[in-house]
Image (cartoon, rainbow, N blue to C red; front, side, top):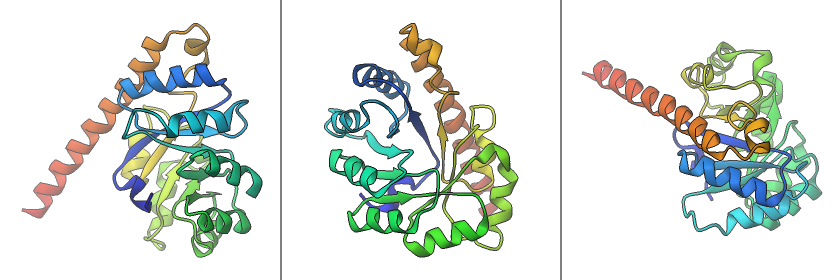
Length: 221
C-alpha cells in the first residue's frame, strides 16, 4: 500500500485489549458506522490473529495496521500477519528502517520538532504526534509553519469534540481510542452504541469536510 493511505482527513479507530471475537465484533460495529481504518495494538492478547483475520476480511475497503509496536520483532510479526501500517509510541530509527524494508507504512511516535525531522529523515511516511493532548491542536500548526512537509497524525486524548480542531490545524488523520469504543459498551455487548458513536464521529468529520470544501471554493472564486 502506498503512503496515500491517508490522502484525505480520516478517522483511525484504535482497538486495544480485546480477544479476537470481541475485537471483530467491535470492528463490525464501527465499520457499519462508517469507520474504515483500524489500528490493532500489539499489547492486545490476540493482536496478530486479529490483524490476520481483518486483513482477509470481506470488507474490501477495510484497512488494518498495528499499534503500540515497540520492537522490530513485533513489527515483523504484525506485517507478516497482514498489517498495512505500523504505529509506534516512540521513534526508533532501526524500527522505522526495518518497517520500510518490509514495504510497510511507518508511523513512529514523536512530540518535538527534532524527533519529527529525524523520523522523516529515517524514512517514516507520517509522524504520530503523541500524546497529542499534552500539546493541543495549535501545536501542529506551529510545527508545520517552519516544517510544512510534515504529515502528522495526533493520538492521545482525541475525541469527537476536539478532533476537528486537530484537522483544522494540519492533521492528515486522527486516532480515536476509548472515546470512540467505550469499554463499558463492549463489556455489555452494546454494539449498537459502538456503531452510533462511529456514525456520530463520521457525521462530524463529513460535515467539516463539506464546510472546508465550500470555503475553498469561495476562496478560489
